[in-house]
Length: 171
Image (cartoon, rainbow, N blue to C red; front, side):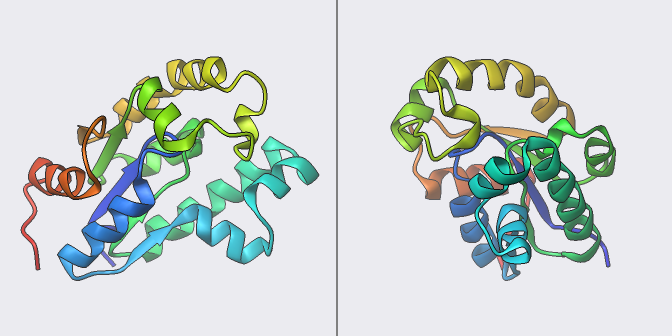
């Protein structure tokens, strides 16, 4: 095992799953999303895990899911938005081809509607999104080999920008 070809990090709603699937198709490999891994393993939504067990329990599940995926997946990997909060996870990402997909708050509003289905954004979503990003932005940037802004870009344009940023050729 050599590890993932690309690891995507960034906030919720930035397009990690959409772009990740497109990247995998273009590179002729598989796509994996650690949030999907957790949902499949737990048999319930992330929002339900947050409500029933709390954020700390979810973060522990997320840390395990990321560790397994980094060790066992050679395609394109998307990590949950908060996965980079864990110091051990950030250490595991060192030396990996990590791309931080970024967007500003206005783009986040358009894409996600900053809806209440996002457990961390239930009250005053716009302010909470800004606060989350103020805390997370340096962590995303710190693990990234490249940063690709997604604002005003189509998934196809973002996919091309990621390939260009990592100097990867399509399959």
